[in-house]
Amino acid sequence: MTTSPATALAARAQDVSSEIVADILTLVRHETSSYDLPALAAGLDLLRDLTVQRLGRPDHEQRHPGGECGDTLTLTYTGTGAGHVALVGHYDTVWPTGTLADWQQPEVSEDGRAKLGGPGIFDMKAGLAQGIWALRLARESGAPVPTVTFLFNGDEEIGSLSSRPVIEEVAQRVDATLVLEPTAQGAVKTARKGTGIFQVTATGIESHAGLAPQEGASAITALSEFVVAAAAIAAPEKGTTINTGLIKGGSGVNVVAGHATAGIDIRVSSEAEQARVDAELDAIEVSDPRVRIEIDHAWNRPPMTLNAASRPLLGLARETARAQGRDLLDTAVGGASDANFVAALGRPVLCGMGAVGNGAHAQGEFIHPDTVPAQTALVAGLLGRLARPLHG
Image (cartoon, rainbow, N blue to C red; front, side, top):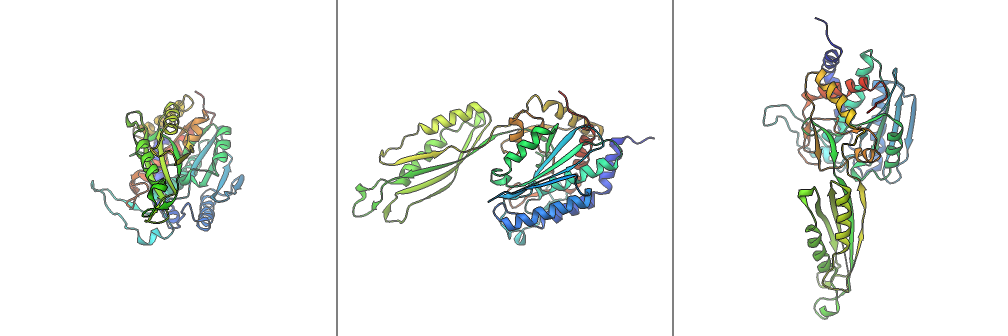
């Protein structure tokens, strides 16, 4: 019986599975907190060296300085076919440097499957390694492959403040972008919420809490009123959530607070909801008119939807998965990623092309190592199908 190219690709991914997992662990063992610039720099060097080790030297390379954020690296490998694809992934993690030393390693999930854990393994160092190996396997297959540009950024977890212009520039000149973020239980992500990270500042009047409380105007009291009112603006049925995650304020327990701040996380599924939230937050009034409320409307990522340009790309991904013997689902999720930027440009993009596991941003973060070959083969197979410009 003749083996199909898709079957051969999946089998080859299975053969090198242990090597892919070893590369994943190499990346995980070097911690890369979003706020540790030396660790980020060394981590990006490690990621570059690993890419070169597996794929050879790129035809074009550029390191974009991140300033107060981790640098962004683009590596372009000229293909043997038509088409140009971006593989995008972040190497920074939410975990503070030193987390690895105390990490509790998971072993087996409730259904008896093996688990492999570590800070950032699911979000998203497994995806980085799988993306590198996907291009290697696509090349080894002998079929035409597109030109591939890897984009590795070190500030995704804090909003991609430095890397966003690079992401948008790359997305505009490629035919398709695959974001190597983790899957949603194996499904690709075709819709994500837009995110806002708002800072609210309350400025009141300080006074002695015992001698002259009436002379004071409490910033903390006013901010508390604002936070409660803000929470009421949420509309979960429309996909809008509002969470005040940080509050700071005051100078002493016996002082009427003159200053207080709050950090508010806002998620929306549509531009209409974004506009509504903006307007209703601005309309909130607190009971003491002496307290001034200032709101920094910092929308970080626009909502991501399955745009017309991305539908053919999803179709190709499903065809690739079927040829490899499985069905590929797609889903909408509440978190945001760099795919939001690409979708907002009207460019073809799929997110969640990386790891299968769970626990992003949680101590129990893990991947299922038995899924690594299939996920790698999926990206490799899709690269082969994209060895020509994508058309709707």
